[in-house]
Length: 495
Ligand SMILES: [Zn+2]
Image (cartoon, rainbow, N blue to C red; front, side):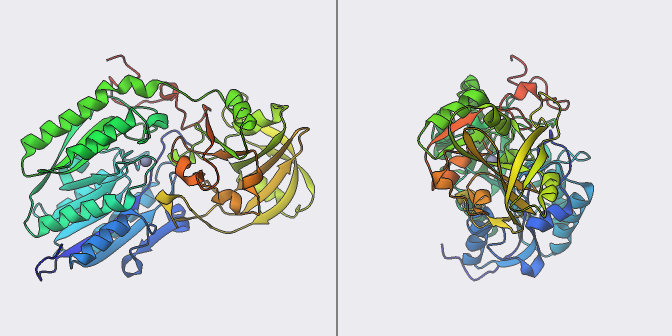
């Protein structure tokens, strides 16, 4: 679109973290700095990845002739709750970088950051921005559809745009849409208002797949709702592993001025989700032993998705459940596993080419990361970053820290394990490609997500099996120790 010569000044930034309330540890400022933490003029359109929401918004705002004021891009893969220092620094850095004469703000948020001392980190940031710039300037945000969107966020912003795909493939378009509506608002072509409707439910992400009903039905309805005065329609299925008071599904609509119409559309969308709630509980995943044997019997390579230890949902990647299952198996074949094991990595130092007795996992018997002793052959060590090939995290760099490839002795299976010091997403094969593992020839490759791994591993294989494992990202939501969630909430209470 061609606009007149007026050049609006727009602050841009990103604060991207999906937290999990049920994991040990915290996400520090150093964790961001180890991945992506870019300030001010050092920021480029590609700072959050080449296909990110941030890149989409950047391109759109530049094309419209806006003067961009880069603030901060702080991006982390899903991790434990934020430290106070990290939240304070991120909030203050963004605030300080927004000048008083700004016309608009665009922020790329995940929407599910969380800290033990603060239930709503993004809401806090947005409220402070609003307090600083006043009520007349426009604030646009983009979100993951697993965002935990709050009333505080709603009150602070004008424009919301969330993904309409899961696995998430429309990052760029989501940022583009937020920026397009921001530009139209700046030029007085629309008067954006955002409204929200709530359904008291959370659902396991196994069925958050836009290729299959029931999620497909709902994402199609969301796309269809986005027309005319409905500038952007979003349906937020939320991240279910957050222990927070406003944990529910939400429909969020940015409407051109007519809030009554917008609210009606939001209620219509959320009531469709509510009507389908029971369909999300139809588990197709098998217990790990059955899933393991089923996957091993399939043509190589096949992916086994470890649902309870989904680093893509904030788990630490330290589950030994698939490993322990493989040790007990008498089937033939080979498998590749990834494990966050900083202590074991250190023990392997200096043992390349040698054998070693290693203790993996730290948990009690029966826990997801139950301790297990293995006779390991230390194959190789590495200390380099990885760059994701998954379309939703394309060229996003992550840091596994010091890593080691081991094999463990087993009568019938060849078991490769990549041990790494820091959690990484296992939504594509890059952690295995850190070493020269010929994963195309391996029978079974472990992934750590519920749905997102499918496009990430498609370059290797379309075959996968879901394993219903224990852990902080279990599909069995009612087994988790929630203390702050709303009551009533489906499926905990039969409403
Ligand atoms: Zn998501």
